[in-house]
View 1 (tube, helix red, strand yellow):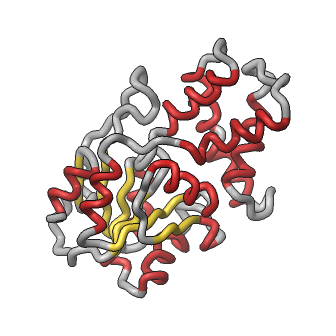
View 2 (cartoon, one colour; view 1 turned 45 degrees about the vertical axis):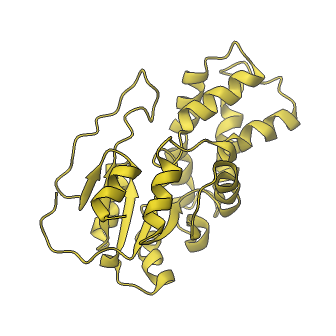
Length: 236
């Protein structure tokens, strides 16, 4: 890992989708509860694949500032016909769109966060909106000290305003913040803003049939199998 000297991080800021919660299994399960014949794996991947293009529509100015809940609904509406879901009622669609609020944490998360919280301030740094993240925390028993979101900064990651915003909220230097994420592009953007970074392996993020490459990147400050391993490394 990066051999440069770093202070012990005061704040650990966590990416959420994929890092903290298992979106793939949760979305697949929820759509199949409504329509058992739908390929839940394909549907989950398709819904998630629309995430970055939808955010780019906002970042380009094509759309005004839009909460992730509303972007999720825009993407969902485009998937109804291809997956044979266009007969779902509005109530069913609203319920399905809120599946992102009901995602389960990975098995190591609650205990790992509890350990990390004993020595560090822990917060989210997600493109998910505050209501979504709060519902998710309640559902999964996630012990955040603070919920920070793109909604707070009116900018989506990887805009520097998000990473530097965490340091500003807590009144610390960027180097005293560590972004914890399962996505190397997110971590690279955080490093460019002076944050420390910890990569978490989530090989099954896209489902057991599509394992991710979780090879270490030497530029990261830390590389850990899961949150328990990160707590071991940070002395929590």
